[in-house]
Image 1 (cartoon, rainbow, N blue to C red):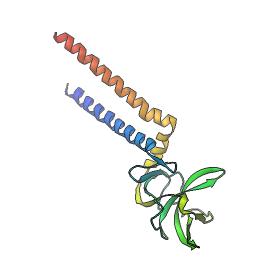
Image 2 (image 1 turned 180 degrees about the vertical axis):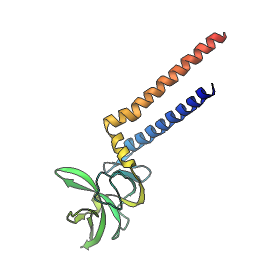
Image 3 (image 1 turned 135 degrees about the horizontal axis):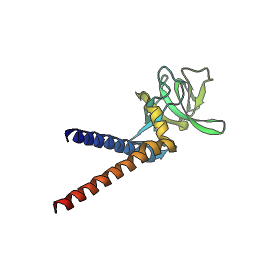
Image 4 (image 1 turned 120 degrees about the vertical axis):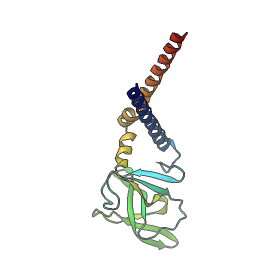
Length: 183
């Protein structure tokens, strides 16, 4: 009897962890999408899918960046996330600012990856999504990337929630049967 109660408590804890994870993922996915990226209370979570910024930021990390308001002054050494066109596709890059250029009152930033031999890129302030302050969680970016896929969302969110519903339904039916036995 005691073992059954322990299993029940552990199962309930696991189910609630899945529910909280589902709520967080849903919040990130469906929050205000400014510039095409999710933003939560002024912060933009980004999952890293390349090794271009290693050793500072590794492939698979989840970094938390602060949304760029266009007014903050950026300086050499800052790491920014910005949009760039590659093969007719808009992608997000994360690079370090090498220099700040101001010509005729217009500011632009020259950025480069830390771990690649790419040419430096000229970035306009309007293309900047966010700035990074050093907050990262190792491996969580890989998990979030998987959860954003249809298969990942189904396997890690929908199936556990369905199992939770079925479990709660069975508990309710058992409670009703116990109630009828008492009468």
